[in-house]
Amino acid sequence: MATLVKDNTSKTTIYVGGLDDQVNEQILHAAFIPFGDIVEIQIPPDPASHNQHRGFGFIEFEEAADAQAAIDNMNLSELYGKVIKVNLARPMRVKEGSMRAVWSEDAWLQKYALKSADPNHPIKASFKQFVACRQ
Image (cartoon, rainbow, N blue to C red; front, side, top):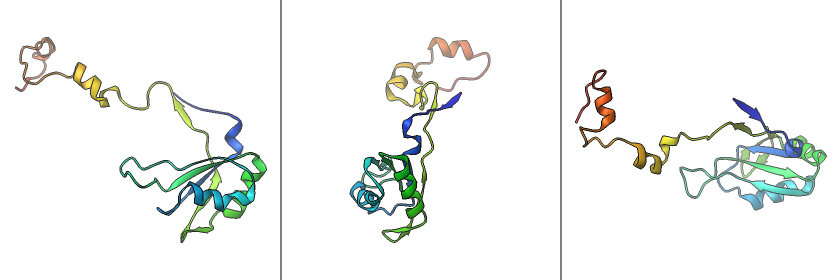
């Protein structure tokens, strides 16, 4: 079951979406510093690309009023030729257990995966009555 994480940053952290590929932390800092003291800026990288981000970022302000001023002034404004969307960031959803399936890890596969070359593996014998095992 998923639960929402509640903390003090829920009203001070904003989401900035629609970022151009050229935008980095320094550019976001320069664009949003007029609204108040910034604690942290995060632009998650795109796992499929080594040099690009995913087109959005998060900015945490010291004060909730500063975050709201940034939203009021920057939402639907233009940054590096693209219209950006700015709103309060939603709290992160945390699930019980891992976010990835255990079988997606190479170490798990090496330890537990059946070797198709071994026709006498005990688990294969257990399932012969249900399915024909290919070799």
